[in-house]
Length: 574
Image 1 (tube, one colour):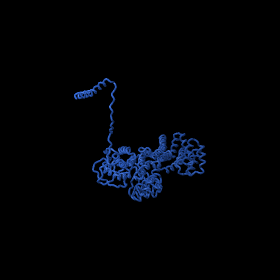
Image 2 (cartoon, helix red, strand yellow):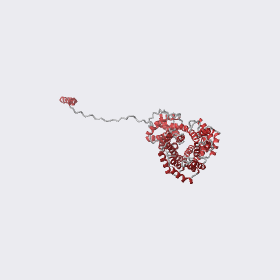
Image 3 (cartoon, helix red, strand yellow):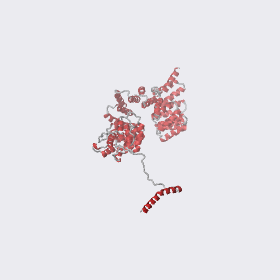
Image 4 (cartoon, one colour):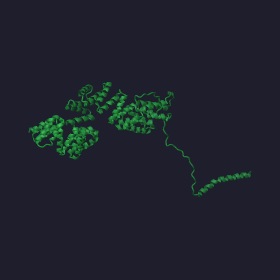
């Protein structure tokens, strides 16, 4: 027994000594010991934020899609007795109802908003929207807390517009989380429309429409954006489709009226306006809109009658003064009265682009000034704020040509031809400018190209003949004139005889050509002025004044002609 115990103790001592021996061996051995095996444990970088824990992903996804149908479907999935709702379900039902009321006004709501007992970022964001404030305290932990503050875009409650950039950033993040969310894309489209970025707005509204094609708000916003982006064909098509679904909707009728008007379908525009006035007979804005349409249709008596009716209510509104000035100019031919009216409008609304534009048009047509400013000066006021305003650029260009600022005119004509590549009028001015600057090759290339494409167009033929004569190709011009004279209209014959006065030689032949021009058209200002110049050069001042006075009668406000006539008066008195 003792021997057995001694053996056990000895064996234990040997076992205990083994690690010590191993250490000694490791110290002597250069080979590294094998590394112990480890088990990797994955640790998430951050925990996923989930507030609506009682809802499965499908239900939450439908809520976040945000279309009326999707919201209603999600609500049905969690409907239960009022006492059975969990707090997050109460919050979701409350938020869902608010989205319907704010974004999808008029859509059917089939549930009540249960009482929410705890403060949370979701109903808090809704409350801020209702108070007109963009909520920046939601934490933006998930899709809904990111997107809900942007309901302010469509709420009609916003106190300021300084939240646009913040809303854009949040909506962009929300769309990254849910690229096909109808609500997020719709809000982004409406926001971009408010920011004047209509083409971008259309892209997001199309995405929203893909999953909610029959939704009124999205379809209407898309039609509006088409109209504002000047895609008139798409605007007309989409507004007509809306009208088919909502034939009595006032907003749709107004949209159709505006779209038809910009497409110059004045008959359709007037019909839509009449339907608006049937429902809103006291709508003064649309009474004036009808006047605007009647002016375009040249139905001046009706337009005057409606303006008289409107003036009993308000004779100083911006639209009234502008339309009254246009009626006086186009119908009464009373430019004195038209100038007085538009000057009144300018005094009341000095920065209004449309008033400035018509004032500059009147100044350009009459050659006079409005409120002490020339056509070019008025056009420059518009261009300072809107450098690509085509109408203002055209007026400014005409003023440069009239005042002989040829190099400036060349630059402006080049810019305008890029904006209006199909405009013959711009090309005609470009040709005249090139001829004045001795850029004969450019003038010839343009004129020949126009003539070869459309040799039947009278205006193009006239420009072609002018270029031929200016470049000294008089025999070609004479052959063309002789071939056109037998079948030409009175106005065209007057032009042809006038141009012939630059081809013939000798005073008698020149005078005969100019007199023939006036026989065909007694109001040909070019022929009258050339006769004035002819006699002025020969110091026959009374004959010169006879023709200049006719020019003045046709252009009573043109300061250039008035000044020449005054100078001629002095010469005659000497």
